[in-house]
Amino acid sequence: MIKKEVIDIISTVTRIDKEKIKDNSSLRDDLFVDSLQAVQIVNLIQDKYNIKIDEIEIFNVDNLTDIVAIVNEYLEK
Image (tube, rainbow, N blue to C red; front, side, top):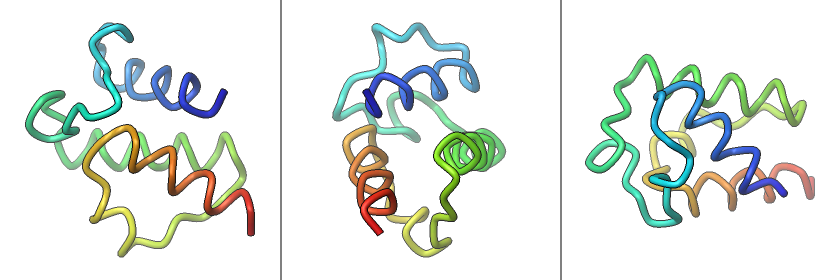
């Protein structure tokens, strides 16, 4: 469920087809997410799940799997 919702958010921000967003797709290298889009993605995720992701963790995110793991971690807190 979370994975699908995160894909929806990434797709909305980047305008990339959902089918092209894979677990290991690099946000920077494969999906060409720039810094503004990254901020938009994080803000939408935080709003959707009512969480506040630590800025340091955001810089360690590289792909969909990383994002889903962080969201799950914050939801468990």
